[in-house]
Image (cartoon, rainbow, N blue to C red; front, side, top):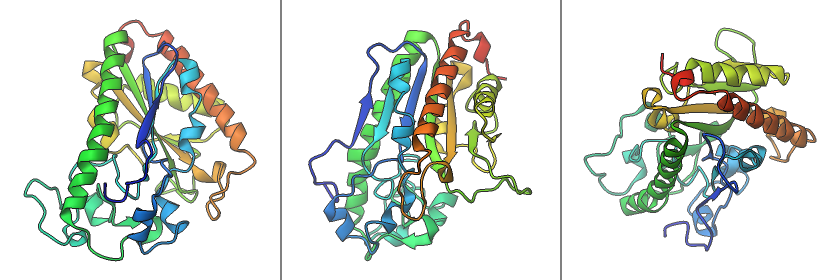
Length: 294
């Protein structure tokens, strides 16, 4: 396959011995396997191309299976294909041939260079040295994007069938310089629920309060309300809830060297407490009523 010919698993599900809580944790942007063929097609060096990663987020949430929830984690890099987009958000300027008519080439994300096949990494650095054959983009979507979402749909459906509801926690990180618009507040965490459309307010507020009780500054929806995954999988009226959680990278990683900070273990421990507290919140639910859509 284009750029991913190396022998490795594109993603994996870390399963608990038995799923005991109605949660699915997902880390779609922490993949850090960069095959040589992909790097050869890029104008960026191996460090610069990593700027789009949600660095080590899969490790930060590694305790999820210990609390009875599966954790889906990508191994492919976000710079290669972004599964937190529609399947066909593509920029015609990136490709050497015409795109199919069903492609969404007019989205804001495409305009910003961050479509399904990204044109740039963070800091507005172009990834590719030359245009790409359209066939390569279609192959990536068919062999990476679609299987990933098929797996995530199965996990959510299985969870919903078992518990009568399913809660997706979509795990991400954000640059350390992010501020809440109109203020100097730099949050440690942002909980996104698409302004109340992807999850119940009770669930969002529980996540916020847990983080605040752990000593963090946590806000809701601004500036990140959730991406395609949150929007697509959150259907509260059907008992399907999706929250996006963004972690300030400066808490745990040196953003210049991408090396873990000494506090990495402390943050991992705090997030294990968060996972456990969210599990306790779920245990207090009685059917779908406690998470009814508003």
